Image (tube, helix red, strand yellow):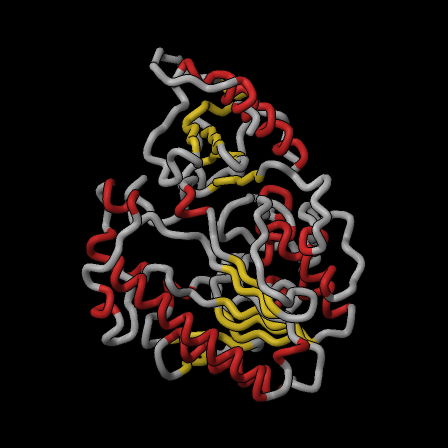
Length: 395
């Protein structure tokens, strides 16, 4: 098994981590995918970063989420660079890998797979790229790669809004290209060892990037460009291709992997396996997805197939507290008419019913996630020429 997603995605951040913010230590009592699969007889390994669940580097043994094999780093964007891959082994010793960071870490993963080809294993391979390099606010692609994408297509919202995309997008694209190539090498390694047909490979990105178009950050925001990420799964139980059209969250990935391994799902997991969706069993699947923002700001949001609704806690520091008891409506987007989220409808009188429906959905999902029901303040409305049919408000 492999993949690239946040370990704490088995439950919402405010449930799993005491502070609910990036950099909070993972409680030692909190079971993870590694511990569940280790109990089932799997060898478990974590390679590289961004772990972001420890107090420091090297990551102390008790803050590694139960992984047996460790070659990782808590904050690679702060202590390594594109051609300087610094990691720490399970004894806390520095390990510097040669080559471009994506290639160096992928090589380490291939070596692990080769050494454990006769054992059932769960490998969590986590790449930093295409995250920006914090020390110099840049997206350092491999030499010669950014040049391939100068002047290429730019997403509509990046072109319409001021930000750093004009300068940074070629490097970002170059990083993505190298990740694609690394994934190909990883799959080739599995094929050559005769493992490809009996190994589940889950590929998921970290957050997306909006290149400082919405705020001074690059990623920690509520916009679709940041929170809607690609996920692809192949292997036993996932053959035949296709796409799931239902709304799926990161919290659904851990139970999906455990279900695919034939293991009983823990009752405290807040997600659900997507395997029933692959069998065409869609009854009871949620019609909305809930998300938390607790870094650049403290916010909560919910989206359906059409609408996206977001509230923010005023005068609350996201890096300090995980949540709040009071929020203010901030955004409402019609994702069918405005997929790039350029037209905020939250103040329009015509969309009061939509906000009311979405507010109820949000409060319900917050309570289901273990949060207290908040007080949400509506914004003053203004007249407009738009109109929303009653039956459209709940879509």
